[in-house]
Length: 232
Image 1: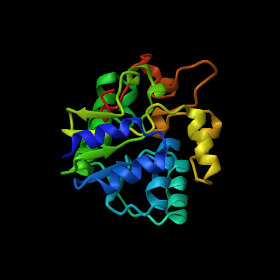
Image 2: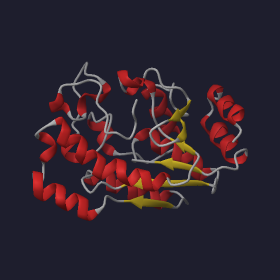
Image 3: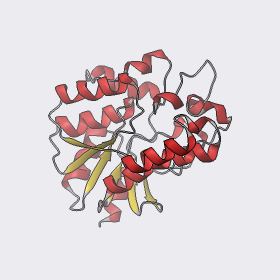
Image 4: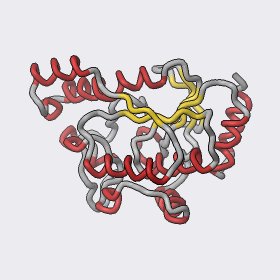
């Protein structure tokens, strides 16, 4: 893999140009994961409108998503000529976890919450990444304190893959303006104070002056909360 080329993309602020260069100058397998959040919708727009077929798109359906997220998924398919695969948790594992710990076990302890996240998100992600070499994400530095030290191009030790974060230094307002100016469909929950949208039982709207991640697993009272997909 041409690491020098990949690292050169860190200075590219034009999203379309960055994604295009990555697609046309990389022979390795590239994947993009979308949760249909506003950042992911911006990246998906760039991939689809430029018809970059060598970038594989996938999503993780945890089985506990908001109805609005599924509706955004459907609107996205209607608007864009893009194919993507859904990866789901192992049904037997989720069944055993639920029968043992209860349907909303994640409220009981951080350990059970993390186990639920692993079963519903991390394990399917491992299958989705497969033999890919580059993973495009919609991570932004201002999303949480824990992501301030991320780099645009970064080696992910957990999944043994290069992670490319083209929107890392974008502000939320810049993302919103990009989505608005390009007529990109987005999750209506963003207009109701939901900044980071995950599973329905684990996500709420944030209040004035709250941290970006305050709406995720709010009962744990910890600003550095992740599900295990992104260590930062």
